[in-house]
Image 1 (tube, rainbow, N blue to C red):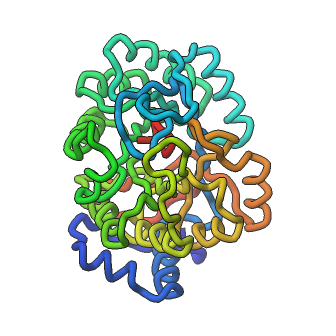
Image 2 (image 1 turned 60 degrees about the vertical axis):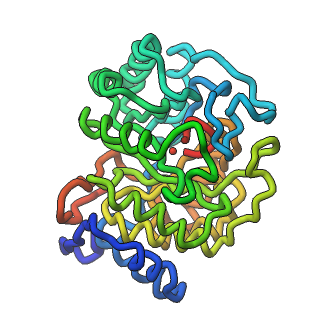
Length: 348
C-alpha cells in the first residue's frame, strides 16, 4: 500500500504484446527499476516479503527428461529415488518451517503425474499441515480434474505448475511433456478453485526475447498466477544443462522487474539459484519488485540460503515477513489493500 495511505489503482492487463515486453527489457536499468518499484509500492508494502518453505516429500526417479532436473531417472546426478514420506515426518518439517517464520508450506513430489492411489496420502498431509495454521501448496506434476478437486477438498490453497520457458524454446529443454499439458493442468487447478503458482527458469541458454516470451505466456493466462516463481538455473552435474553460460545478474534483475510490471498483483518469488546470489543482488531484486522467497537450507534437492542468513539480510534491509493475507489478482482492476515452482524437480 502506498506510504501516504492512498488507495492507488493499477490495471491488470492480459493483452500485453511481445514487442511491449521486449521494450520493457530494453529500458535503461534505472528507468526499468523505477517503473517496477512504483508498481510494487502501489500494490504491496515494499518492506514485506512473503516467506515459504518447500519440502520434497517424494524425491527422484522421475520419468521426465527436463534438461535442468537432477531428479530425472535418466540422468546420473547422485539423487536417489525415495518413497513418499510419512505424514508425521512432513508435519515435523512443517512445524520447523512455521517456527522459522514461514507462512506457506509447499510439498513437492517428483512425479510425472500422481497416481489416483497417491492422492489420499497427499490429501492427509495437506489437511494436517493446514491445521498448523500454514498456507498449503503442492507440486506433484500433471493433474486430472478429479485429482485437482480432491486436493482442493483437502484444503490445498496453491498448486505449483511452471511453464518453465517460452513456448518456442520449450522443445530445447523438455521432450516428454507438451506445453499444452502444462496449460491444461493449470486450467484444472483454476477450475477446482485453487490458486496457481506458476513461473519459469531463466539462464537455460534462452535469449532475452525468449525470456520475454516466458513472461508473455504467464501474463496472458486467463488469470495471472497468484505466485510467480522466477528461478535462476542451478547447474547440476549430470544434467544436460550443466556448462550453460551463466545468466548476467543484471539480466536476472530485469526479468524480475518486468514480471512485476506485467503481473502487478502477483507475488514474484525468488526461487532456485538464490544460494549463489549475493546479498546485493537479492536486494536489487527486492527493489525491482520481488516480494516472496523460499527459505530453509534445501530447495528440494538443491541448496538454498539458510534461515539465519535470510533473517540477517532482512534485518540489514529493514524487511519483515509478510502476513498470510494476499490481494486478489483475478480482478480486472486491483486496489492496493494489503497489510501484509517443474518445482517437483530442482526449481520451484
